[in-house]
Image 1 (cartoon, rainbow, N blue to C red):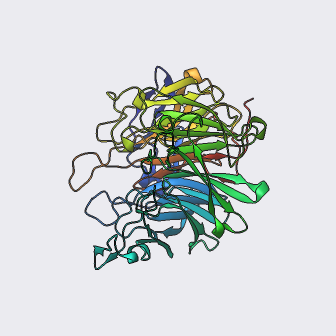
Image 2: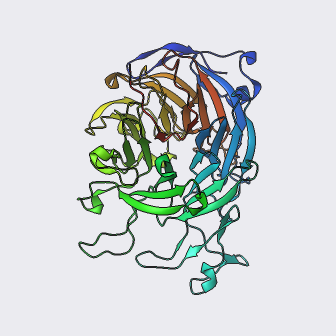
Image 3: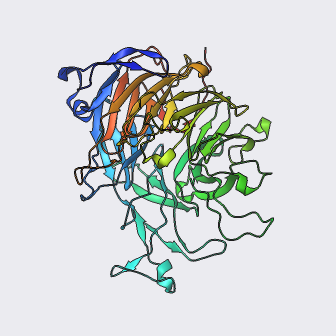
Length: 502
């Protein structure tokens, strides 16, 4: 059970205690899932939908982790390294799995194919981030010289075959990767109906509804600085330093196609000065902005036609660099569009970067002025972790309220963090849920990957995608989130409207 202790933020006393709850106060499933957690008095574990991943590296399923989340009505979609799950969350204290679809992976490995997800009505759009492996005959790769290498599937996503592509300069011989379009009108039997091949792959993705043109745009992020071929001086090289934009017609989603590439930097500057986009965020309404976090930088565009932008061709505004940042990761806007919240991912999310001895910049969350790119404030991770816990600030969204700026954030092995930065110069943590270290039973040494991949606020509850446990649902009792707006759906990297602070 959680230990009793005072909580301190960065030079700020958080006025609450961690206290154990009686067994009757927490539903049994949630109680079991959070038995090793220490959490603040205003956090209440409510529901649990298990999708356990073995900690023992010798067992099948080890490494097939749970990843990101999205929501449509009472359905949550949880990405996994082999597909996704659909979970009915109509009763948050009793979530019910609809399907655990595990048919979108390579036969040799799911590693690296983290399965970022978007949901829109009866569609799930899923990122595939690993080059399709070479097809095999009798356990031996078909050689490059054999034409069958390019006509024999090397992997499948559902019934959709995935192939190798022959070299086509400047592209080398490569495996297909990109974005799959999946029909979930029969939720128990997802059906892959389309695929868009992207040489850069799709590490993460952000949906941009363009309903005036009866389509979805998908901003696909490669998270890689790859440049293809050997361009001559003055030539524009084919590269991955930006956002690939895909079009999905709503009246024919199977006809999804590649639209164009958005460089992540000033188009007037050399490609070498641009950076990969690990994640991108979009806010529509009165704000009409795009933010991409990657490398050591944050890039901001406008999609407002009055400022020269559009949804399919955003206009570059500025590019902000953060000294000491190496892997820019996540960006999310406040609901008035004034501040992107961003951070980086030192160690790729697999290292213990929240120790008291870790560098300050590795533990810092930044709040940035959208119009200038200047840092308006920051917060240092307030709860140092051990050297056996992989930890960085990770995926988040901001609570849709007019009362303040309240991001709800995953932090890998330090769990959930809820922050108030209504005054960006005085940000402080107002709630958390922090699990104990995991132990690999075979062998019981070293750092074991786990914790929160994503944590999001949706319609009055906090949804936590735990890498090795599944989906945990919490209730936060705090005046900062009382009366927050309810939404019909949520793809957390996309805010379809704006809310001004009162």
